[in-house]
Image (cartoon, rainbow, N blue to C red; front, side, top):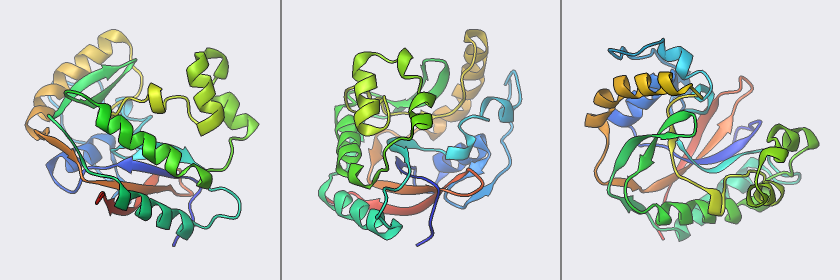
Length: 229
């Protein structure tokens, strides 16, 4: 198994219209491991490449366990086996659908209805695989600006390597980087009619995906594991 700089466990849509659009929108197909051309979106107030620059390298995904370096003494094969065993114990999740939403200063797809089962799935992945995560370096810790976090978020950062997990988690598939209010409204208005026909109802998470960060800084799909618990 290939070694990567960092690993992550994501939800990634299976090949199909939504996955294809998400890859093109971001300009990076993580499943194929290659750059792809951006789509034409009528009414967009700026180039697609501009608003997607920040999330592009991660690929179109919903984070379950955020990127981490592999712990010392662990081989990539050990992590892959652990993800496979965990997936075999976890059940698929279904919610009514997805919607285009704003989270803070960026746009994302978020679940309709109760997201408790998605949060529980992410929590199980975060905690169940944490022995394979190397501790944050001082530089990595400082990069998260712990002084700006509330006590719960800082405790998560210290224990799990990321502030927005467990009680602070909100499932989403990121579509843009941060934008000012007016720009975000304009991008949302242009993107909504293009996305609407592609959004599944219901929305299902039948599997989880191990991703790896290559030397170029871009994440690629390593393997997809069915949730069969």
